Length: 296
Length: 296
Image (cartoon, rainbow over all chains, first blue to last red; front, top):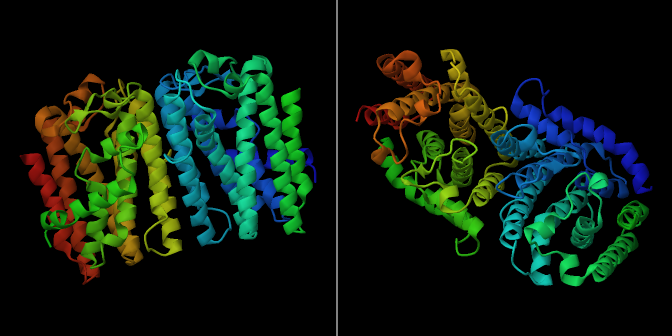
């Protein structure tokens, strides 16, 4: 199965499930602001990766909707808090006013807190075994907390207006964006009940794609167009952030990006060699879609 | 056993356990700021209630340290975020500069996020059965999220500069402070494996004490002394918040407080009537200690 076909089939039902998990916006301003940011769209990349791993191993996808929704809520809360005036101070996200512009700073802080909290309620649902749920909750907490995403965000802030080496930059992004992508692959593997070696391959694929994704983001921040991206460009330079294009030059950053995609494709074939049931086309077409997007 | 003796025995080992759950502050500013607020003291009321319920049913207390630490981390994160300039804008908490004054606003936002996230990692630990852990995680998420504490905080903010009825005020506090106290009693009952009716009595005791605690806080905000409280007094009046003394007058607020304590003592005796093993003196002395503190 092709990734684009897969997305067409599952994105809309998943979004419907996720929105039903947060009660109707007419009740309170807090819930309205939670829904506002959840509804703002985005590619639902993390949950769709989780579901694609399950699908590639020929497992039912819908059973994992609660875990995908939890993952998307954590990603969404992190964007709300990152956009706050005390953090990146962004007023535009996905082509719409950021949460604190649309509501208020206080409501945006609380909406983020509430989405993060709700994520862990969702992790207790669904029909995975209790032991698997607890493993996933532990992993999600570690990947999104002070040793993962939040720690990466703090390191990223501390790195503003200072020059980082390529290694330091990679370490920050491995936490800030890489860990949640890792969780998507790990959770897919765990819920699909695959061999340990395969989970390790999936995690390495996640790490590689996480880096690729970040380089691509950095390149788009230099080259992209605000209208099609739906957010301000040039923000990194304004904040004096170290980026891949700044460190490597634009051409070499592009080269670095392509190498990472190649590596991910190799890991994907490796899984197919071990697990005959694995539909390697699904993730291969996902990886190739990243390349096409960056080139357009 | 007397509550004061109980606190002497368990508070210090619990605090040590909790601090060990967050790595040494020398590593990063984020972890330093998490520890700063965790170390700032406080009475550890919520975890100690959880442990006291276990002890009263003659169950081991240490097994519940992870769940008590999770509860205290959620309470602590909520204080860090409540103190932010966009929220209550407080510069003093427990006699020390608030987190965003000591570090920065961005670090305080992230430290709160990280403590909230860490709490759910701790909930997966300890030796309770998997099914019990998942029940507790679900309850903690519901009690601390948009339908619980965070929702109460938003309602409290919306209620500034407007007159609330007693019923509206009670509904706000039932969520803002009541729900986490409810969780402490509920978790104690669940971990002690008591009868369903007893869990219901414990939850009603929690609700009653939650209200008593809030009235007491409101009274102290009018009558108290900044030095012994370690926080600014008169803040409620400044923010135009509805409080029990403002709505009822000081004398009747005191009466309301005493009635709630009486009701809690009655519920406590009721549990003893049903469960012979129950050491009713432990929670009775806790309830009486609230009265003495308020009177002093």
